[in-house]
Amino acid sequence: MRGRPPGDEPEFLVTDYVTITRDPRTRLVVAIGGDDRAAGILQQSGGFIDAPGPRGPYHRQPHTMRTEDQCLGSTAAALSLLQAGYSVHLDPELNMLSTKDEDRKTAHRYLDQLADRARNATSGHEFAAVLTELVAPHDDVLHRLHNILVSALVTWADRVHGPGRDTDPAQQLINAARSLSRLTRQLEDIRALAARTPTTTPAPSTAQPPSPHPPAVGRHR
Image (tube, rainbow, N blue to C red; front, side, top):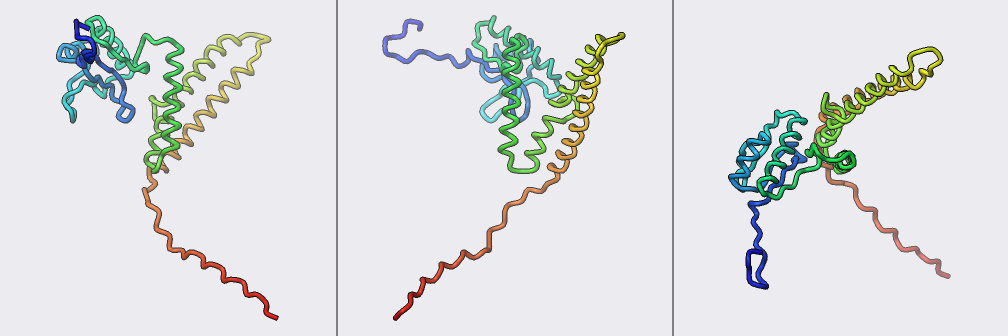
């Protein structure tokens, strides 16, 4: 603690800490914290650029950078910062050195976040944004799932050639891939309809409250 007197607060150097993460709203990869020296490392190793912010400048990667390059740059920048003596938190989604178990947990967190966004959507545009994550061309969940099925189909088809081989599993994979393509097109239509749905506020109710029942009249003798 650098010889601080007993009972004093420990010294915390905030500029020694850097967080590299992906903003869930904009999907930008940003780096927060550090000093000028850390900024130079982020630029040289990770392709980060300076950007103005409401509380001072921060660092981010260009939004046109490919996802794979974002992960490579973020991992390289984190390693360089660690070697330079900084403390670094790297988003597991960006860590190219993460284990398969960590990758699986990151994928599960992403899908759980999509489910939360779907449950909390209050407009057609918000609902359409969730569906975009599922069906946007070349960068969506279902497109990647389709690629997995096609890759499995190619591998399986190479192994079932020849007399006496069971080709039924390969045909089932073909049918599954076709069904997924049809489902993707259906969700694209639903997304388009949701995006065109106007945002409306419920009109105040004009119904009159029911009047209380009159008291029962007893019979007199």
